[in-house]
Length: 326
Image (cartoon, rainbow, N blue to C red; front, side):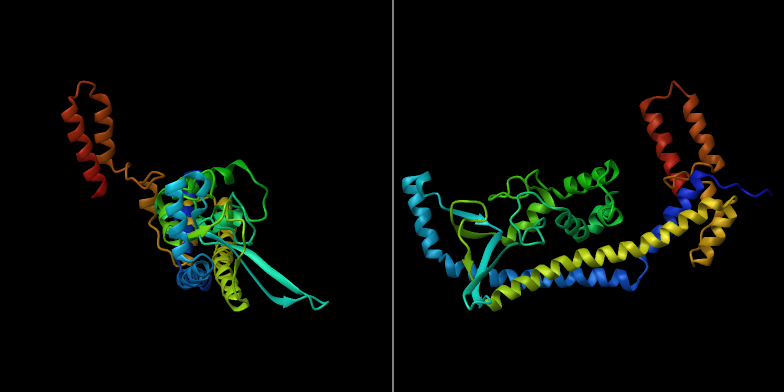
């Protein structure tokens, strides 16, 4: 038999199947990412418990209850209590070179799209979106989305391809147009579910509240460790995706140079990936078997019969799908 010549469809099939294996391999980089994500989960839980103690120390629950009572009685003039997940913590236990006490302060946002730099922000930066996509990577991937787009485009200028995938990911996760919302009304779905446990009652009159919440230096350092754990998810994900990108870049070069499908099959075999040439040939780009003679004949017959009833069409389609599976 003559050799099957390589074409774009075969290259794409080989590339996607080999890349899928690369992503599922138990490499050090992948394991480091998964461990970073697990560590974040534990750190988030423990650190929020500390945040709750610090916030309620500054805003006692009895004061919150009193102010809410006044709001019910006097209306908007007493509307000074709100739910928040971003807290402006500060301590004054350090001294400058002149021996004067100095304040150290930063924002700590426990939300899914909370920033990683400590600055108050009403719109998520790229790092915060990178975290959200990496955190829910499996869910995004299972729904045909690309959770690795920010890592893959690292160092590149914004472009339509990148923006399209980022917007699709954010939409799936339920991110609102404005990531900051006291009542979370702009967020839905997974974003809202993630954020829900991390709201506390805060007294103030502006976003992230107008007054810094006092904490000790030790407490502040624990909050910094938590934020580092969140940033580490992004860092480890980036490292892992970089390692895959290096491999797939070389894969593309090789596949582009091959003239015959058998060469691609041999490459996969050398990589420890067993692929069947016949199976690649008889499937379309989505993996559906259509070149099996029986299946193809059924499809063509179905196209010719213009007078089929709706029931006949359904029956024929079910039969076709059954044959495809078998």
